[in-house]
Amino acid sequence: MSIKATPTAGSKLLTPSDHTLVMIDFQSQMAFATHSIDAVNLRNNAALVAQAAAGFGVSTILTTVAEKSFSGPMFSEITDAFPGQKMLDRTSMNTWEDAAVIERVNQIGKPRIVLAGLWTSVCIVGPALSALDQGFEVYVIADACGDVSTEAHNRAMERMVQAGAQPMTSLQYLLELQRDWARGETYELTTGIAKKVGGAYGIGINYAKTMFGAHEG
Image 1: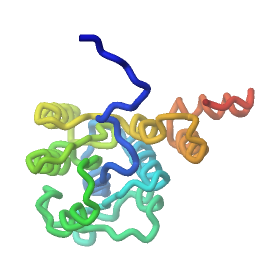
Image 2 (image 1 turned 60 degrees about the horizontal axis):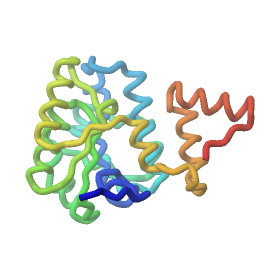
Image 3 (image 1 turned 90 degrees about the horizontal axis):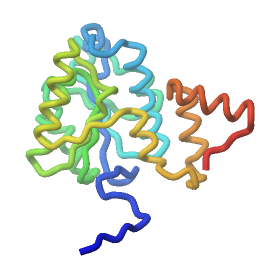
Image 4 (image 1 turned 180 degrees about the vertical axis):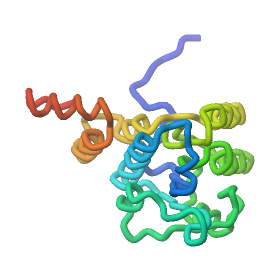
């Protein structure tokens, strides 16, 4: 039996409207002990994810743990992208065991959960395995997560992938939301985010636009 290809996106690709992004515990106390990724890259990648989600109108939950008493505020790179949005502060290490967070997940009602945060082996593994167990599709933005060691981060990623979670990167997240340069309404948004926090790719965009007036698509 022959297979016929069609010019349509695969069902596993994310769209801005089909998932809830949960950004977890991007806070000073957790960042101090994070060694699997340096602080500059972590903050940059978190900013990329937050700006992408805000720009594309992705349903987003921002949650902290013991913000006032121990862990400190969420990174400003994230909160600046969502001005006025309430932080859901928890006592539980596993976000999925917090009633307020789950109430918000249910209010949003999306079948896919995208996770990013600190630490990978605790605060990301917990909700990832819990959401998978309850029938959600789970994606983890690996380079917008960090842990106390590379070993801890890698083992946590392996554990989640073995359970069915799908790994991705922060730049991949942005470009998957755009996916077609012909989508002119978000072209400047996407390239603008990339130029600011997209690393070498952003430098390349800036060079091409400045030197040659280049335009993708």
